[in-house]
Amino acid sequence: MKISDFKEGVLGGVPIALGYLSVSFAYGIMAAGGGIDPLSAVLISMTNLTSAGQLAGTQLIIDGAAYFQIAVTTLVINLRYMLMSLSLSQRIDPKMSTGERLLVSYGITDEIFAVAYQREKAPDTPYMLGLISLPYVGWTLGTLLGATAGNILPERLCSALGIAIYGMFVAIVIPQCRKSHPCLVVAAVAAALSCLLKYVPVLSSVPTGWAIIICTVAASVLGAVLYPEEVDEV
Image (cartoon, rainbow, N blue to C red; front, side, top):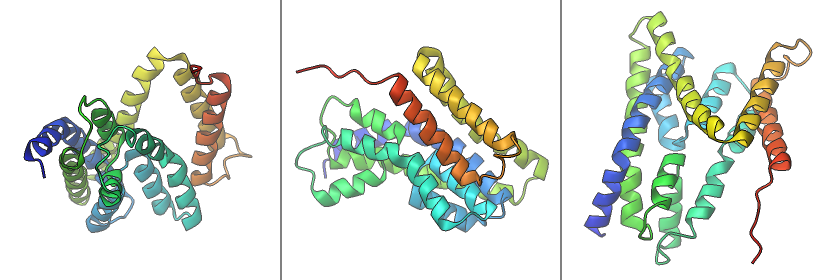
Protein backbone atom coordinates (compact mmCIF):
# COMPACT_ATOMS: atom_id res chain seq x y z
CA MET A 1 0.00 0.00 0.00
CA LYS A 2 1.27 3.49 -0.87
CA ILE A 3 1.40 5.21 2.52
CA SER A 4 1.61 8.68 0.94
CA ASP A 5 -1.60 8.16 -1.05
CA PHE A 6 -3.33 6.72 2.00
CA LYS A 7 -2.33 9.73 4.11
CA GLU A 8 -3.54 12.08 1.38
CA GLY A 9 -6.90 10.33 1.41
CA VAL A 10 -7.14 10.50 5.20
CA LEU A 11 -6.45 14.25 5.17
CA GLY A 12 -9.08 14.73 2.48
CA GLY A 13 -11.62 12.86 4.60
CA VAL A 14 -11.16 14.92 7.78
CA PRO A 15 -13.72 17.67 6.97
CA ILE A 16 -16.16 15.06 5.68
CA ALA A 17 -15.82 13.06 8.90
CA LEU A 18 -16.47 16.14 11.04
CA GLY A 19 -19.63 16.91 9.07
CA TYR A 20 -20.81 13.30 9.28
CA LEU A 21 -20.22 13.26 13.03
CA SER A 22 -22.76 16.01 13.65
CA VAL A 23 -25.32 14.74 11.14
CA SER A 24 -25.17 11.14 12.36
CA PHE A 25 -25.49 12.40 15.94
CA ALA A 26 -28.87 13.85 14.96
CA TYR A 27 -29.72 10.58 13.21
CA GLY A 28 -28.87 8.62 16.36
CA ILE A 29 -31.20 10.80 18.41
CA MET A 30 -33.97 10.29 15.86
CA ALA A 31 -33.47 6.52 15.91
CA ALA A 32 -33.48 6.42 19.71
CA GLY A 33 -36.65 8.52 19.77
CA GLY A 34 -38.31 5.90 17.57
CA GLY A 35 -37.47 3.08 19.97
CA ILE A 36 -34.40 1.72 18.17
CA ASP A 37 -31.66 0.65 20.59
CA PRO A 38 -28.12 2.11 20.19
CA LEU A 39 -26.57 -1.15 18.94
CA SER A 40 -29.17 -1.51 16.17
CA ALA A 41 -28.76 2.14 15.19
CA VAL A 42 -24.98 1.70 14.96
CA LEU A 43 -25.36 -1.45 12.86
CA ILE A 44 -27.68 0.43 10.50
CA SER A 45 -25.06 3.17 10.06
CA MET A 46 -22.23 0.67 9.61
CA THR A 47 -24.08 -1.15 6.84
CA ASN A 48 -25.62 1.84 5.03
CA LEU A 49 -23.44 4.97 5.09
CA THR A 50 -26.16 7.11 3.52
CA SER A 51 -27.98 10.04 5.05
CA ALA A 52 -31.23 10.53 3.11
CA GLY A 53 -31.84 6.85 2.37
CA GLN A 54 -30.93 5.81 5.89
CA LEU A 55 -33.17 8.44 7.45
CA ALA A 56 -36.12 7.47 5.26
CA GLY A 57 -35.56 3.76 5.77
CA THR A 58 -35.25 4.09 9.53
CA GLN A 59 -38.40 6.18 9.73
CA LEU A 60 -40.26 3.48 7.78
CA ILE A 61 -38.93 0.85 10.20
CA ILE A 62 -40.21 2.95 13.10
CA ASP A 63 -43.59 3.29 11.36
CA GLY A 64 -43.78 -0.48 10.88
CA ALA A 65 -43.75 -0.38 7.07
CA ALA A 66 -43.52 -3.54 4.97
CA TYR A 67 -40.07 -4.83 3.98
CA PHE A 68 -40.80 -4.38 0.27
CA GLN A 69 -41.83 -0.78 0.81
CA ILE A 70 -38.62 -0.06 2.75
CA ALA A 71 -36.49 -1.75 0.08
CA VAL A 72 -38.04 0.15 -2.83
CA THR A 73 -37.88 3.48 -1.01
CA THR A 74 -34.21 3.18 -0.13
CA LEU A 75 -33.43 1.88 -3.63
CA VAL A 76 -35.00 4.92 -5.30
CA ILE A 77 -33.33 7.39 -2.93
CA ASN A 78 -29.91 5.75 -3.23
CA LEU A 79 -29.87 5.25 -7.01
CA ARG A 80 -27.62 8.30 -7.33
CA TYR A 81 -24.77 6.33 -5.77
CA MET A 82 -24.85 3.92 -8.69
CA LEU A 83 -24.47 6.83 -11.10
CA MET A 84 -21.64 8.31 -9.02
CA SER A 85 -19.84 4.96 -8.93
CA LEU A 86 -20.17 4.54 -12.70
CA SER A 87 -18.79 8.03 -13.24
CA LEU A 88 -15.91 7.56 -10.79
CA SER A 89 -15.02 4.20 -12.33
CA GLN A 90 -13.85 6.08 -15.43
CA ARG A 91 -11.29 8.04 -13.40
CA ILE A 92 -9.87 5.57 -10.89
CA ASP A 93 -6.60 3.70 -11.33
CA PRO A 94 -7.04 1.06 -14.08
CA LYS A 95 -4.89 -1.33 -12.02
CA MET A 96 -7.55 -1.49 -9.29
CA SER A 97 -8.86 -5.06 -9.08
CA THR A 98 -12.53 -6.04 -9.10
CA GLY A 99 -12.43 -6.86 -5.38
CA GLU A 100 -10.88 -3.47 -4.62
CA ARG A 101 -13.51 -1.72 -6.74
CA LEU A 102 -16.29 -3.48 -4.85
CA LEU A 103 -14.71 -2.51 -1.52
CA VAL A 104 -14.30 1.12 -2.55
CA SER A 105 -17.81 1.34 -4.00
CA TYR A 106 -19.26 0.63 -0.56
CA GLY A 107 -17.90 3.93 0.73
CA ILE A 108 -19.06 6.18 -2.11
CA THR A 109 -21.14 9.08 -0.80
CA ASP A 110 -21.89 12.51 -2.28
CA GLU A 111 -18.97 14.16 -0.49
CA ILE A 112 -16.46 11.34 -0.98
CA PHE A 113 -17.33 11.18 -4.68
CA ALA A 114 -16.82 14.94 -5.07
CA VAL A 115 -13.39 14.89 -3.40
CA ALA A 116 -12.18 11.78 -5.26
CA TYR A 117 -13.46 13.00 -8.63
CA GLN A 118 -11.65 16.33 -8.32
CA ARG A 119 -8.28 14.74 -7.56
CA GLU A 120 -5.81 15.48 -10.36
CA LYS A 121 -4.10 12.11 -10.02
CA ALA A 122 -6.20 8.99 -10.68
CA PRO A 123 -7.58 7.79 -7.33
CA ASP A 124 -6.01 4.45 -6.42
CA THR A 125 -6.95 1.94 -3.73
CA PRO A 126 -4.80 3.37 -0.88
CA TYR A 127 -6.11 6.88 -1.53
CA MET A 128 -9.75 5.76 -1.62
CA LEU A 129 -9.39 3.65 1.53
CA GLY A 130 -7.86 6.61 3.33
CA LEU A 131 -10.57 8.95 2.06
CA ILE A 132 -13.36 6.63 3.18
CA SER A 133 -11.95 5.55 6.55
CA LEU A 134 -12.48 8.68 8.68
CA PRO A 135 -15.95 9.54 7.29
CA TYR A 136 -17.00 5.95 8.03
CA VAL A 137 -15.73 6.23 11.60
CA GLY A 138 -17.33 9.66 12.00
CA TRP A 139 -20.70 8.44 10.73
CA THR A 140 -20.67 5.39 13.01
CA LEU A 141 -19.35 7.20 16.08
CA GLY A 142 -21.84 10.05 15.69
CA THR A 143 -24.69 7.53 15.50
CA LEU A 144 -23.48 5.81 18.68
CA LEU A 145 -23.19 9.10 20.58
CA GLY A 146 -26.57 10.34 19.35
CA ALA A 147 -28.40 7.08 20.07
CA THR A 148 -26.84 6.93 23.54
CA ALA A 149 -27.67 10.56 24.26
CA GLY A 150 -31.22 9.97 23.04
CA ASN A 151 -31.74 7.52 25.89
CA ILE A 152 -30.27 9.89 28.49
CA LEU A 153 -31.18 13.48 27.56
CA PRO A 154 -34.64 14.97 28.24
CA GLU A 155 -37.22 14.34 25.52
CA ARG A 156 -37.61 18.04 24.68
CA LEU A 157 -33.87 18.46 24.12
CA CYS A 158 -33.71 15.33 21.98
CA SER A 159 -36.61 16.60 19.90
CA ALA A 160 -34.82 19.90 19.34
CA LEU A 161 -31.53 18.24 18.42
CA GLY A 162 -33.34 15.85 16.07
CA ILE A 163 -34.28 18.77 13.84
CA ALA A 164 -30.59 19.20 12.95
CA ILE A 165 -30.67 16.45 10.33
CA TYR A 166 -33.51 18.19 8.50
CA GLY A 167 -31.55 21.43 8.73
CA MET A 168 -28.72 19.67 6.92
CA PHE A 169 -30.97 18.82 3.99
CA VAL A 170 -32.22 22.42 3.84
CA ALA A 171 -28.62 23.67 3.89
CA ILE A 172 -27.80 21.38 0.96
CA VAL A 173 -30.85 22.21 -1.17
CA ILE A 174 -31.24 25.99 -0.69
CA PRO A 175 -27.82 27.05 -2.10
CA GLN A 176 -28.34 24.83 -5.15
CA CYS A 177 -31.84 26.24 -5.70
CA ARG A 178 -30.49 29.78 -5.58
CA LYS A 179 -27.96 28.98 -8.30
CA SER A 180 -30.06 26.67 -10.46
CA HIS A 181 -33.62 27.32 -11.69
CA PRO A 182 -34.19 23.64 -12.65
CA CYS A 183 -33.15 22.60 -9.14
CA LEU A 184 -35.58 25.13 -7.66
CA VAL A 185 -38.45 23.82 -9.80
CA VAL A 186 -37.73 20.16 -9.00
CA ALA A 187 -37.43 20.87 -5.26
CA ALA A 188 -40.64 22.93 -5.28
CA VAL A 189 -42.56 20.21 -7.12
CA ALA A 190 -41.30 17.54 -4.70
CA ALA A 191 -42.28 19.70 -1.72
CA ALA A 192 -45.72 20.45 -3.17
CA LEU A 193 -46.40 16.77 -3.87
CA SER A 194 -45.24 15.87 -0.37
CA CYS A 195 -47.68 18.39 1.13
CA LEU A 196 -50.54 17.06 -1.02
CA LEU A 197 -49.84 13.48 0.04
CA LYS A 198 -49.63 14.56 3.66
CA TYR A 199 -52.57 16.94 4.09
CA VAL A 200 -55.16 16.16 1.38
CA PRO A 201 -57.64 13.73 2.98
CA VAL A 202 -57.99 11.47 -0.05
CA LEU A 203 -54.22 11.22 -0.55
CA SER A 204 -53.08 11.13 3.07
CA SER A 205 -53.80 7.40 3.28
CA VAL A 206 -50.79 6.70 1.01
CA PRO A 207 -48.08 5.03 3.14
CA THR A 208 -45.02 7.17 3.91
CA GLY A 209 -42.64 5.01 1.88
CA TRP A 210 -44.74 5.13 -1.26
CA ALA A 211 -45.26 8.87 -0.79
CA ILE A 212 -41.47 9.35 -0.81
CA ILE A 213 -41.17 7.20 -3.95
CA ILE A 214 -43.95 9.12 -5.73
CA CYS A 215 -42.43 12.51 -4.88
CA THR A 216 -38.91 11.45 -5.86
CA VAL A 217 -39.79 9.80 -9.16
CA ALA A 218 -42.37 12.41 -10.23
CA ALA A 219 -40.11 15.39 -9.50
CA SER A 220 -37.12 13.70 -11.18
CA VAL A 221 -39.08 12.80 -14.31
CA LEU A 222 -40.50 16.31 -14.55
CA GLY A 223 -37.01 17.79 -14.22
CA ALA A 224 -35.66 15.47 -16.92
CA VAL A 225 -38.51 16.40 -19.30
CA LEU A 226 -38.41 20.17 -18.70
CA TYR A 227 -34.63 20.53 -18.42
CA PRO A 228 -32.92 17.82 -20.50
CA GLU A 229 -29.15 17.66 -20.31
CA GLU A 230 -27.56 18.94 -23.49
CA VAL A 231 -25.08 16.50 -25.03
CA ASP A 232 -22.30 17.84 -27.24
CA GLU A 233 -22.17 16.12 -30.61
CA VAL A 234 -18.85 14.50 -31.45
